Image 1 (cartoon, rainbow, N blue to C red):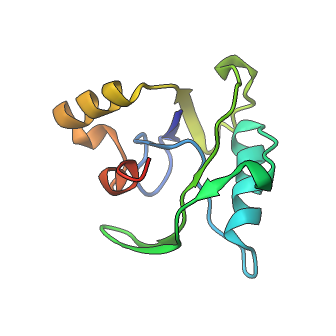
Image 2 (spheres, rainbow, N blue to C red):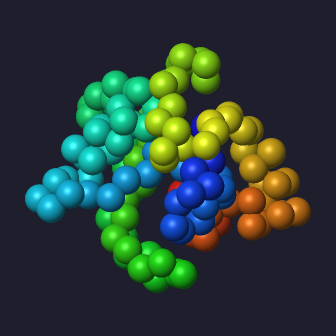
Length: 121
């Protein structure tokens, strides 16, 4: 599942990205942030024990930031999500093959560092 960033976002507006994106508040852990952002942006109640993650990393692309990817398998219908329109324009499920085809034909469809993050999935 990927989400499309709101068209009014400063960075990568309208681009498709990982399903949930957030910035940690001071003193907030990556884990607490992903649980909070999933609830705010998509109405999902995540349990920390069901999350898998990679190691924290520094993105040195167009936008420099620290980040950490989380992965979870859910059985949820798109129409059951409660999308926060100020953050998320749209949400869709793509197969890996669809993503690879779209990326090959139009890499600008996705956010700046998508290719680095997608290889981890």
